Length: 191
Image 1 (tube, rainbow, N blue to C red):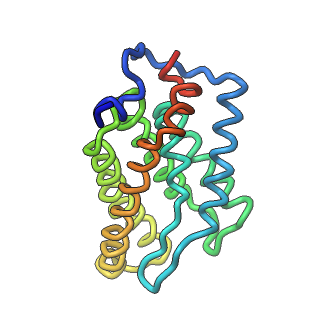
Image 2 (image 1 turned 45 degrees about the horizontal axis):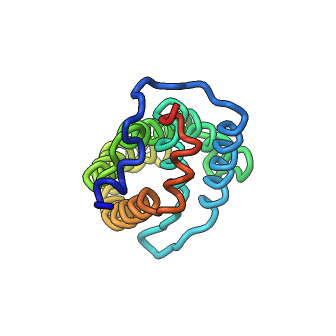
């Protein structure tokens, strides 16, 4: 098999959106949301960068079920993370909006598409620039009342490091042969 055939998990599929979730699909989304919550608690921390893998379950929901389900799941995970773990600064709806948009981005770029390297780079670049560096920096400046010029430089470094990790891990996720059979079995793209 060529690399192009490996990443085209939805070859010859109907491109109509299927927003209905059966019991299995709903259970899968629930488990992936729970994985998101668990993975957000575990990470590698340095003085400048904190790397978690909590984006992987949301990316997988986007791949399997599309932008609407992924966006709602990401927003729900953000709300649940606050309810379960609390937050130092309290709940802020701007971060929930950012999570929603991130989930939608995964679905738009990766659902029912031939997953190629450039798509993974494009979605992570969009998320890094538009959501992390623009929206989240703005939300942080509102919450902390610090100027964006003070907040942005360390966030640039953090996103420069994490985007590489995110691209590589998502690329591994979509190219794993064992996981590919799961995608084809449970994805709404197959219906």
